[in-house]
Image 1: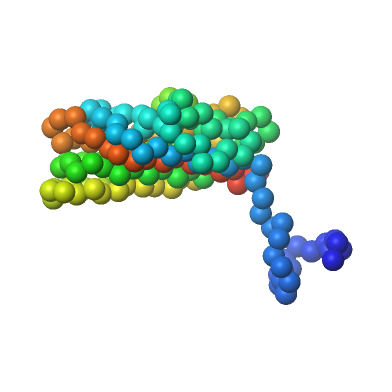
Image 2: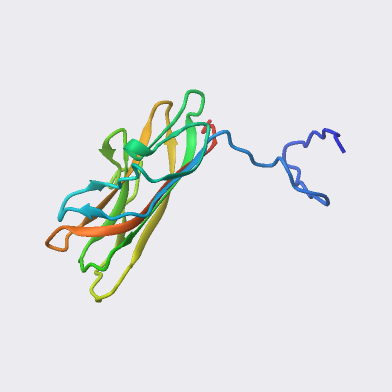
Length: 171
Protein backbone atom coordinates (compact mmCIF):
# COMPACT_ATOMS: atom_id res chain seq x y z
CA UNK A 1 0.00 0.00 0.00
CA UNK A 2 1.37 3.40 -0.99
CA UNK A 3 4.15 1.97 -3.17
CA UNK A 4 4.90 3.44 -6.59
CA UNK A 5 5.82 1.13 -9.45
CA UNK A 6 7.36 2.09 -12.77
CA UNK A 7 5.97 0.03 -15.65
CA UNK A 8 8.32 -0.24 -18.63
CA UNK A 9 7.13 0.28 -22.20
CA UNK A 10 5.47 -2.83 -23.64
CA UNK A 11 4.59 -4.30 -20.24
CA UNK A 12 1.09 -5.47 -19.26
CA UNK A 13 -0.52 -4.40 -15.98
CA UNK A 14 -2.38 -7.11 -14.05
CA UNK A 15 -4.20 -5.82 -11.00
CA UNK A 16 -4.95 -8.28 -8.19
CA UNK A 17 -6.19 -5.56 -5.83
CA UNK A 18 -8.53 -2.61 -5.98
CA UNK A 19 -8.34 -0.70 -9.27
CA UNK A 20 -8.25 2.98 -8.32
CA UNK A 21 -6.66 6.04 -9.84
CA UNK A 22 -6.48 4.69 -13.39
CA UNK A 23 -8.76 7.36 -14.80
CA UNK A 24 -9.71 10.71 -13.40
CA UNK A 25 -10.75 13.89 -15.16
CA UNK A 26 -10.73 17.44 -13.89
CA UNK A 27 -13.60 18.35 -16.27
CA UNK A 28 -17.00 16.69 -16.72
CA UNK A 29 -20.54 18.06 -16.94
CA UNK A 30 -24.09 16.94 -17.59
CA UNK A 31 -27.10 19.21 -18.14
CA UNK A 32 -30.71 17.98 -18.31
CA UNK A 33 -34.14 19.51 -18.82
CA UNK A 34 -37.63 18.01 -18.83
CA UNK A 35 -39.91 20.75 -20.18
CA UNK A 36 -41.49 21.35 -23.55
CA UNK A 37 -39.49 23.07 -26.27
CA UNK A 38 -40.97 23.95 -29.67
CA UNK A 39 -38.82 22.99 -32.65
CA UNK A 40 -39.46 24.81 -35.93
CA UNK A 41 -39.86 22.85 -39.15
CA UNK A 42 -36.78 22.64 -41.39
CA UNK A 43 -34.36 24.58 -39.16
CA UNK A 44 -31.55 23.58 -36.84
CA UNK A 45 -32.60 24.57 -33.31
CA UNK A 46 -30.42 24.83 -30.21
CA UNK A 47 -31.55 22.42 -27.48
CA UNK A 48 -32.64 24.80 -24.74
CA UNK A 49 -31.26 23.74 -21.35
CA UNK A 50 -31.82 27.11 -19.62
CA UNK A 51 -33.63 26.69 -16.29
CA UNK A 52 -32.85 22.99 -16.50
CA UNK A 53 -30.71 21.02 -14.08
CA UNK A 54 -26.94 21.01 -13.92
CA UNK A 55 -26.63 17.37 -12.85
CA UNK A 56 -22.91 17.86 -12.27
CA UNK A 57 -20.28 20.34 -13.44
CA UNK A 58 -16.78 19.35 -12.41
CA UNK A 59 -14.46 22.21 -13.32
CA UNK A 60 -17.23 24.75 -14.09
CA UNK A 61 -17.32 24.05 -17.85
CA UNK A 62 -21.12 24.05 -18.38
CA UNK A 63 -23.45 26.99 -18.97
CA UNK A 64 -27.16 26.13 -18.73
CA UNK A 65 -28.23 29.54 -20.05
CA UNK A 66 -26.52 28.94 -23.41
CA UNK A 67 -26.57 25.08 -23.49
CA UNK A 68 -22.81 25.30 -23.84
CA UNK A 69 -19.73 23.38 -22.68
CA UNK A 70 -16.50 25.35 -23.00
CA UNK A 71 -12.96 23.94 -23.01
CA UNK A 72 -11.05 25.67 -20.19
CA UNK A 73 -7.46 26.83 -20.20
CA UNK A 74 -5.07 23.87 -20.04
CA UNK A 75 -7.65 21.33 -21.27
CA UNK A 76 -7.07 21.25 -25.02
CA UNK A 77 -7.28 17.68 -26.31
CA UNK A 78 -9.76 14.82 -26.51
CA UNK A 79 -13.32 15.37 -25.31
CA UNK A 80 -16.39 13.11 -25.50
CA UNK A 81 -19.89 14.57 -25.77
CA UNK A 82 -23.26 12.93 -25.21
CA UNK A 83 -26.55 14.40 -26.40
CA UNK A 84 -30.11 13.10 -26.13
CA UNK A 85 -33.72 14.15 -26.71
CA UNK A 86 -37.22 12.66 -26.51
CA UNK A 87 -40.03 13.90 -28.74
CA UNK A 88 -43.63 14.61 -27.75
CA UNK A 89 -45.65 12.39 -30.08
CA UNK A 90 -44.88 13.87 -33.49
CA UNK A 91 -44.55 12.55 -37.02
CA UNK A 92 -41.49 13.50 -39.04
CA UNK A 93 -39.49 12.07 -41.92
CA UNK A 94 -36.13 13.46 -40.70
CA UNK A 95 -34.98 13.81 -37.10
CA UNK A 96 -31.34 14.82 -36.70
CA UNK A 97 -28.99 15.72 -33.87
CA UNK A 98 -25.57 17.30 -34.20
CA UNK A 99 -23.24 19.54 -32.24
CA UNK A 100 -22.05 22.99 -33.23
CA UNK A 101 -18.45 23.96 -32.48
CA UNK A 102 -17.93 27.68 -31.84
CA UNK A 103 -21.32 28.42 -33.39
CA UNK A 104 -20.72 26.40 -36.59
CA UNK A 105 -22.31 23.07 -37.56
CA UNK A 106 -19.89 20.12 -37.48
CA UNK A 107 -21.85 17.50 -39.47
CA UNK A 108 -20.37 16.65 -42.83
CA UNK A 109 -16.88 17.59 -41.64
CA UNK A 110 -14.02 15.61 -40.18
CA UNK A 111 -14.79 17.28 -36.82
CA UNK A 112 -18.33 15.94 -36.36
CA UNK A 113 -21.17 13.64 -37.26
CA UNK A 114 -24.91 13.98 -37.67
CA UNK A 115 -27.11 11.47 -35.88
CA UNK A 116 -30.38 10.71 -37.62
CA UNK A 117 -33.46 8.71 -36.80
CA UNK A 118 -35.58 8.21 -39.90
CA UNK A 119 -39.35 8.42 -40.24
CA UNK A 120 -41.33 8.65 -36.99
CA UNK A 121 -44.79 7.85 -38.25
CA UNK A 122 -46.78 6.18 -35.48
CA UNK A 123 -49.31 7.98 -33.31
CA UNK A 124 -48.65 8.18 -29.56
CA UNK A 125 -44.93 7.80 -30.14
CA UNK A 126 -42.38 9.31 -27.76
CA UNK A 127 -39.19 8.34 -29.56
CA UNK A 128 -35.65 9.16 -28.42
CA UNK A 129 -32.55 10.16 -30.33
CA UNK A 130 -29.02 10.30 -28.95
CA UNK A 131 -25.39 10.39 -29.97
CA UNK A 132 -21.83 10.34 -28.67
CA UNK A 133 -18.99 12.20 -30.33
CA UNK A 134 -15.23 12.23 -29.71
CA UNK A 135 -13.59 15.55 -30.60
CA UNK A 136 -10.10 17.05 -30.50
CA UNK A 137 -10.62 20.60 -29.19
CA UNK A 138 -8.55 23.68 -28.44
CA UNK A 139 -8.76 25.90 -25.37
CA UNK A 140 -11.86 28.17 -25.47
CA UNK A 141 -13.69 26.02 -28.04
CA UNK A 142 -17.34 25.57 -27.10
CA UNK A 143 -19.88 22.91 -28.05
CA UNK A 144 -23.69 23.12 -28.21
CA UNK A 145 -26.35 20.51 -29.20
CA UNK A 146 -28.81 21.18 -32.06
CA UNK A 147 -31.88 19.34 -33.42
CA UNK A 148 -33.60 19.37 -36.83
CA UNK A 149 -37.01 17.99 -37.83
CA UNK A 150 -39.11 18.31 -40.98
CA UNK A 151 -42.66 17.31 -40.05
CA UNK A 152 -44.13 20.24 -41.97
CA UNK A 153 -44.87 22.28 -38.84
CA UNK A 154 -43.56 23.22 -35.42
CA UNK A 155 -43.19 20.22 -33.08
CA UNK A 156 -42.38 19.71 -29.41
CA UNK A 157 -39.63 17.85 -27.59
CA UNK A 158 -40.14 17.16 -23.90
CA UNK A 159 -36.80 16.04 -22.55
CA UNK A 160 -33.14 16.58 -23.45
CA UNK A 161 -29.65 16.29 -22.03
CA UNK A 162 -26.13 17.27 -22.99
CA UNK A 163 -22.87 16.31 -21.37
CA UNK A 164 -19.15 16.27 -21.97
CA UNK A 165 -15.98 15.08 -20.35
CA UNK A 166 -12.29 15.64 -20.90
CA UNK A 167 -10.22 12.57 -21.69
CA UNK A 168 -6.78 14.16 -21.86
CA UNK A 169 -4.26 15.83 -24.10
CA UNK A 170 -4.22 14.73 -27.76
CA UNK A 171 -0.47 14.85 -28.15
